[in-house]
Amino acid sequence: MLGQWLRHVGCREDDVLVFLAHNAPFDKRIMKKAIEKAGLEVPNNWMFYDSIKIFKQIYPGLPSYSLKNLCNRFELQEPTHRSLDDVNCLLKMLKKGFQTLSYDEISRKVFQHIFE
Image (tube, rainbow, N blue to C red; front, side, top):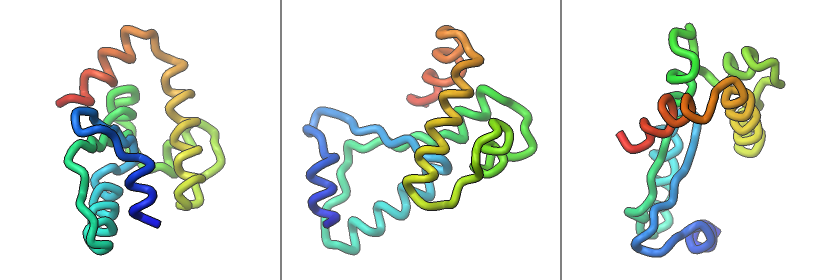
């Protein structure tokens, strides 16, 4: 199953596949271990970006950037820590967060940090 998923999300050698995750180092570590355990090669053209960095740029100084606390801030249902629920929660939070910013602010506060 993991091999099929890797082929499905894979990309050409000269492309980069970007993953956005809340606490991305954790997800990256888990994915890498699972791929290695299956005896498969970890792609070297994947890039992980942590949404916590995005929220720290948009809302500096919050006491916590946990998924639960951010969902509460945006008046969203608390995440269940099931993959799909967390992804949907993150998507809703990003939409609400970006609605408060102009295009220039999004570029300056968010996207410039992706390549740091």
